[in-house]
Length: 137
Image (tube, rainbow, N blue to C red; front, side, top):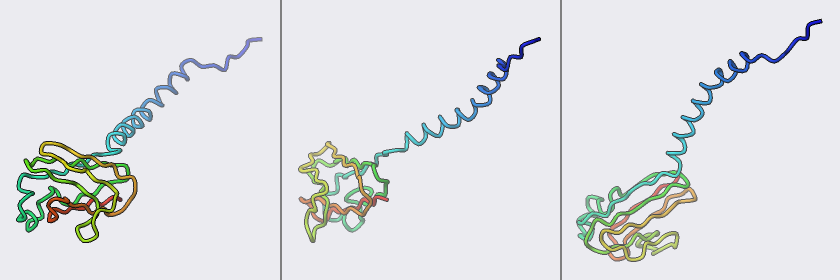
């Protein structure tokens, strides 16, 4: 009596090759998601920010409003020759303690990662007309 062998080497190869397109799609989706996860947004403090006229054009922080996701970061670049701060809160109520760059000299940066959804106002404590908002969704 002939013994039947249930193993099929060519079937195994077909299964692996049939699985390859799904694996490829998974890897592509994973790489795209991983690259977009924890994104970083840049905000520039221009040289003109120390002049109160920037408040009229809402250009003291550029952009003055950014939207991002939970876990994302904002990096403020002081492109000005004047020191500034990036202080959470507003000029009416003062700092709220969420983040504070302390004195940010020209050419330096400050980053903050947002871990909770909400609207975060911020200002420069040296030049109170400089205001901005981070919206975390």
